[in-house]
Length: 317
Image (cartoon, rainbow, N blue to C red; front, top):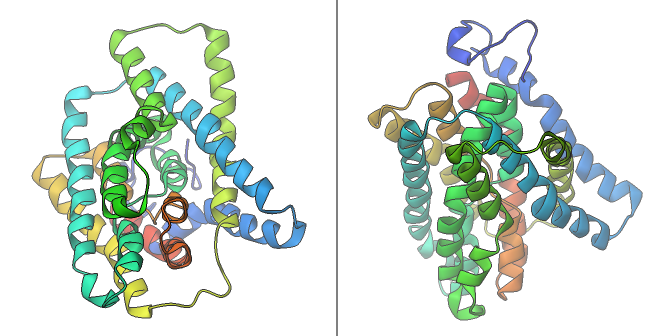
């Protein structure tokens, strides 16, 4: 559960607690500190790329799915209200893709660079999303963010891979079917809907794994930052970062209100749209022969800029 002084409950129930950007920034300071610590540790400890890539894989394949499954399986979920939540997240994601297409003239004749950086307009960093959701709304926030992350992973991957398709390999459906985030989300939701009571020992083990996911995930985000040698097209960097961190949460705000979202689900939809670009965008670009350096620059820029914009959106909730 979150804490800021003696404040408890959702933001709207606590007038004055999170009304300022500075207060919201202080709320997120521990999470941002872990990101910066990850960047510092990578440069000081000299553990090598293999260690950090292995850590990110451990979080992505084991720890993060464990958190999603344990939270979704145990938390009371209003499935009727979850439909407009997913609709709002989908609208923000597709809106990002459409706005990303408008950046094509910035790349002139470099179609490969555009295809690689296009995904930075809509892909989202799940680790930061779950950390922020847990701070704001505890288990209910993690469950709401988990629903968004799990259901929209296939859409984000299809859009990203589709733009890079001619440079990559086939087998997208197989990749989606084995995606640990999708499997964990579907399993957790199925157990929740069916009212399955999982053994206490199993839940304790899975919960322990999940507890390690946020801290290690944030450290891996920081380790992936490219703080030096980040040269490239400044106009494209500014455009994609503004789309991801400013335009999409504004769109989610409008769509969420239009669909009648409120409380935890409204907050989660806006924050989901306001998340910086995922480091997996860089991995995809490299694997498919794209502009890895350009994507790394954009991921780093959006992550650092989100340290300013996320507190802004939280202060408005």
